[in-house]
Image 1 (cartoon, rainbow, N blue to C red):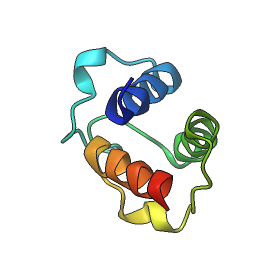
Image 2: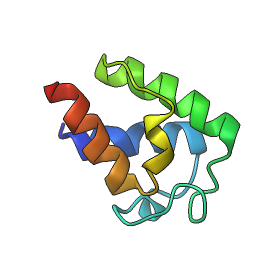
Image 3: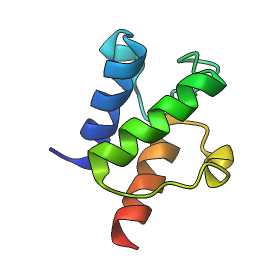
Image 4: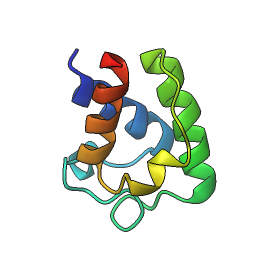
Length: 78
């Protein structure tokens, strides 16, 4: 399964929203309703899924599902 599909699967499992809402341009806060608590839980779920360490302060600039996917891909290479 490719990275974007895995990211969407984690988001969908955590947020329990219609799968069609998870597009690359979907805004995490405005479109998907991700709260600060959701963000923390997602961070942990994504770290478990991808076996990476994520920096919460770096995630401030992550606004869309596409941004999140790109951030994770970069962390997997590093």
